[in-house]
Image (cartoon, one colour):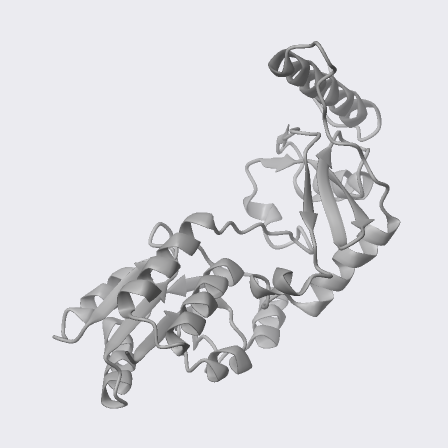
Length: 301
């Protein structure tokens, strides 16, 4: 089988990654006010962030036309592809997948459209996994099954470097604290009560108050459960090849400063569910006290 992979530019894969696995990336359009740019062709990452900092308008995206997908499909078919698997940005937030479906309808060839149900690095990791499998000679059925399985298991978590761009549009925000510490094969992360983790909550609350006065904050306190990130093991990087060096270096720096925490354990002879409820209640009460007394949050009479 000669299965080729097509995706869209929301995958945020690097040029060397797509070139190595012969992945075709169909670009979305990005608008800043009245100016429109073709992603990856007329606008790279550094230019995007320059415009983001300088523009009064937030960027908007537009799905590629069906014609752009049709051109990509035709190129692969002309090059001898026996099947094409197109993995797109989540259909829940974009019309991109619908454009790909429309384009595929113009061909009698075997073209499969897969909803990544994800975006950015999440979508990118699914695309890379599918492309690696296709490179081994796997069938289209096998590639699609792998992509769909990955889409159900892939979750994207984002962190903002600055509040400035989204602050004018904020209606509320959920916050939580986390502790990160080094373990033998990498680092471990655990959500914890407010003020007991690595997050500089004082700086966050101060800036939030300046940019978003009167906008409510919800405490999202689910503590006591750690998750390991064994980045010193080779297999870890198979799912995280697109991690950016600057972000990862900051994560490692936080881990070096962190303090190990014990995960929740129910005392012997005590009902686990009740013990967990009591534990979470205590975490929440400490968080509310810290938020009121130290951060100055909450309604004052």
